[in-house]
Image (tube, rainbow, N blue to C red; front, top):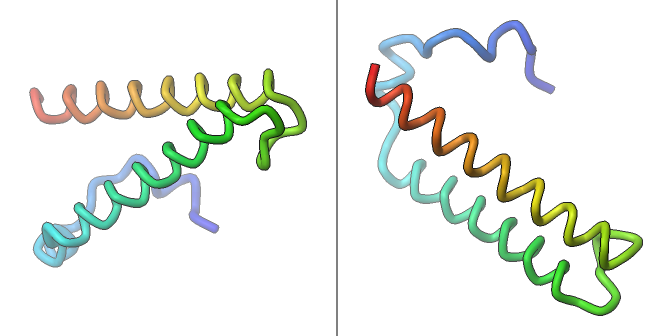
Amino acid sequence: MTNATNTKTAPAADDIATIERTDVSRTIALVRHELTEIFNDAKRARPFFAPSKREAEGKLAASLKALTEFAESLDAIKKR
């Protein structure tokens, strides 16, 4: 479990030096996989990860909203 107080701090210079493109690619692939699973679940007549189709569609909408907000925050960080 992560500590909520550490989520707003910038990583140390040593941490940034250890980040590689493969780590970024792996994380993006994981996000894509999870979104695909949520999307597929929302299209099923009987979803696996939600009690109803309507709730599965709600999870998809919430996931896309979260991803959009995250992308916008990355853009804002880039422009600072």
